[in-house]
Image (cartoon, rainbow, N blue to C red; front, top):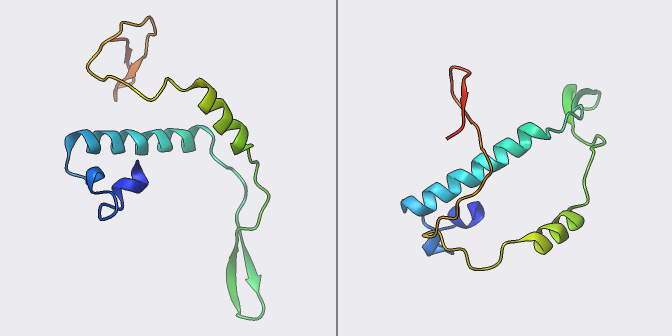
Length: 109
């Protein structure tokens, strides 16, 4: 969705400015932010002196802990809710989702 919104000439139906599209893209960006914060890669990226250029050079070729994305994709495909999602139908659930306020308090709507 984000990639499509960033290419409105190719995906005109995803053009930003539509409140529904904007809200969805904001949700996607926030999901990415939360994922990055919760499973942040703490691999060390170092600066190393380069005798040839007489400068420090960024070395990003370090070991990272990766996950098998194909297994994640397979799981998501097996557990998806389906192609049709009606956002006009409310189904009451029993999951309490806390809302965290800036003052540190928490409430359950």
